[in-house]
Image (cartoon, rainbow, N blue to C red; front, side, top):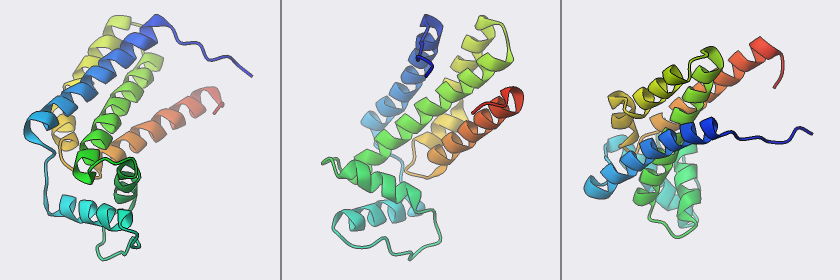
Length: 158
C-alpha cells in the first residue's frame, strides 16, 4: 500500500481552501445563512427527519441535502446553522479539488496558487454557498467526478 505523502505546497493549497471556507462562515456568522422557499423545504425536511419522521417526498427536490443536514443535526447543531457548516465545507472542498486538478494540468506553482485564490474568491461560488441550497454539494460532486475522470483517463488508475 502506498503511503500518503503531503508536501508543503499541498498544505498551502489546503490553507487557501480553508480560508475560502472561513470566508463563507464569516459571512454566515454576520448575516446568517441565506433562505429561500427551497431552503425552507430542505430545512423542514431535515427537522422532520430529526424528529423521527420519514423523509416524505412532498417536493420534487434532491433528498441528499436534507439527509446531510439531519446528520449534522444529530450532533446537536441547529439545522439552519448546519446548512452554513455544510455549505462552507463543500465550498472549501470544491476549491481544494479544483486547485489539485489545476495542479495536475499546469507546471507553474504561481498559476496553481492564482487559480486557487480566484476559485476561493469567485463571487458566483461564494453567493451560491451562502444560501441553504443543494448547489454547493452538487458543484463539489461535479468537480470531484470530473477530476477523477480526468485522472483516470490520463493515468488509467483510480
